[in-house]
Image (cartoon, rainbow, N blue to C red; front, side, top):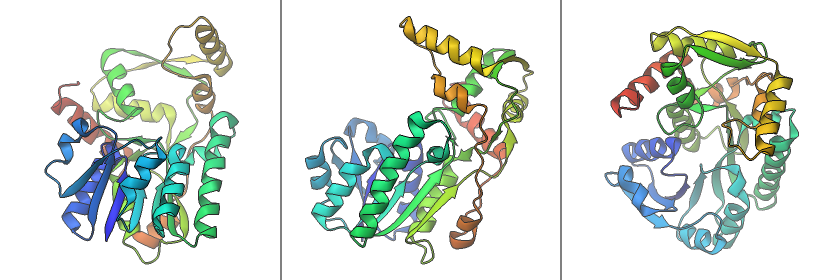
Length: 294
């Protein structure tokens, strides 16, 4: 079986391909935007195809000759993935979505829900065997877009701003656990034609997550609590003035929202067993130090 994979050079994608290479259960065809970024894949037994997920013709051509799809690159590209699968008559696919579909803040969640709905309509209308995995916030090394930034900030600063009271619940998932979930579910007989939320091994208050990071950096942090409404006003103001700010107003609003999700079904169907945040953060700090980013 030849598997077409997107998001191959991402944090999760590299781990998926490494795991598939060890198992040797499938041939891998990596769809990448830029072959120059493929150095980490060179030692793996994978075919490389250069294309752009925004270009339907290149996605169709990339899928040619494949029997299944593992789409890691993001739900925002799903329409071209769907159309290319139709064109190539591919009837098996695993798709990464997001728990962001459950957010009460509609700017992003309504968009994600609309795209996932299109995906689910497609697989049911076309009789495609499918798996949808919805991870929580992914972390793990210098390539993640969330915890990596927190680690670097805490390593340099004593004071840490928190929007709201810091008691909202979070459940970050380590990138290798996402990759293992992809591989294990793909080769499971129990997981097909189902959707799963996958989350980390620890449910934490947001400020507990920050304290764990600080402790593993041997740092002490002092929290500065900022009302969410003040944070949203400030971000709106700086955006209006054309100043780049690392957070969007919706991200600040979501800091007051619980982002925890049960993963019992994934545990039962394909043995999903994520590590704790304490374990994962030790791995991430070690990886950041190994590449001299700490």
